[in-house]
Length: 531
Image (cartoon, rainbow, N blue to C red; front, side, top):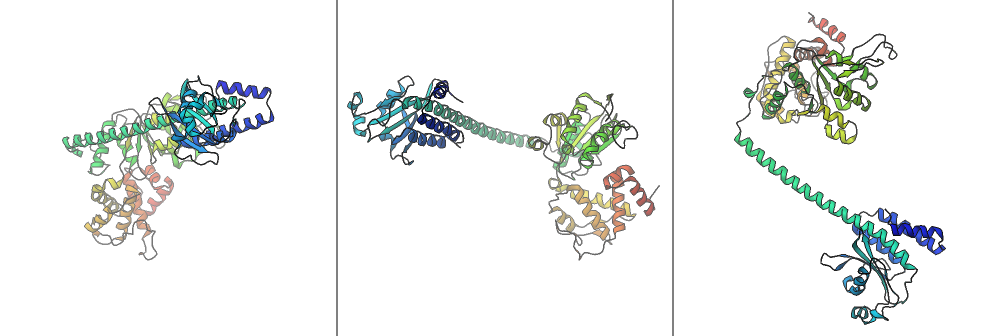
């Protein structure tokens, strides 16, 4: 930012400048870069003052700023050797400062203060001043400060030729000082707003706590729907189910946010099973599990010949979900280019297959999920903000298992029942010692981790009770000193549990297990379980 006076000065320098002027101009321009890099106002003023003393051959320099009472106070004082001046308020002539400020914005030059009008001023005599150069720092017709240079031992230390330089220098300094003052006010306002925000949050929290104490305790029997697939009666579980209860009948997109293994797909299936589209298909897509270059074709389909290997038309998973629900798991992992196409689909409710010309209308509900903080993904630039707001018409946090410890006994019983059904035997009971040990764990893998632990313990147990004998330390790898595992029994139990979770749907069970449908059929045939 350059003032008009400084711009005129630069133009004059270009038209005809001496070598000394060019050296001084280079110094002033270098100073602008240094001032622009100053970390704060104090560093800015100190750099400004040191360079002014050097450029104008002063003995000392002072920057004064308004004190709010019509006077000026010293903000910084430096000597020729770049050291602070001791007791600077006593080293400045207030008469010189006042004369300068009242001089219409022009610089004041005093070649010898001990002669002429100023010699009669007591402060001039006391200070034993000889040469003085003073200029107001003005920005937007307001005096934001004053630059004061002096030399006590040499008269004529400053000359008329210095005045244009000093005024141009002062214009740039005033702009910088003004901007730093504005920045300081912005920071103060920001700090006040932050404090007000914190106080507001605390007030809201206190009010919410009071309201919670007045409201009756929320229990599952107050919900409109039973949600038998989602187990638990812990407060976090019931609050999350109450949120689903309010969203079931809607048609708007929902974004489920929760850690891996918390049961986001179960929540999506509940929204579908009890909603208006329950008679339609439920199509689940794990965005992170499909290659980026194949994802567009998987979602929107393709026409024959669209790319190498496209030997037939394919309608895509979006169209497969027509009349039902499309579940997009790990949606924040979608490539940015495809995010734009998903956004277009959500806005227009039409798809265009890869390689095709026609757009096809699709009627469905979209439920998405992510195990990341979607706002952080937006801030990092990996997730489009407009897509986030389109998907998160309502955002539902899914509580992690560590917030649902009261649900552990019911969950463990359910997983043991699934293991018993898979092996065709009696249901084993978990001992209190085992439940206590499980309750002390942090469960970073949530429900998925708990189910795997319970299935393993069931496979290793022979009696009617499952205890903590074979429970590995949390986070420990499988040790070589553990008993030999019956891998076939574990595999059989895992398949049985997957089929139970998929309500007998073999394609869905294969997806949960991470194997192909053909591999699942081969294993069922080997175990004699194929219908």
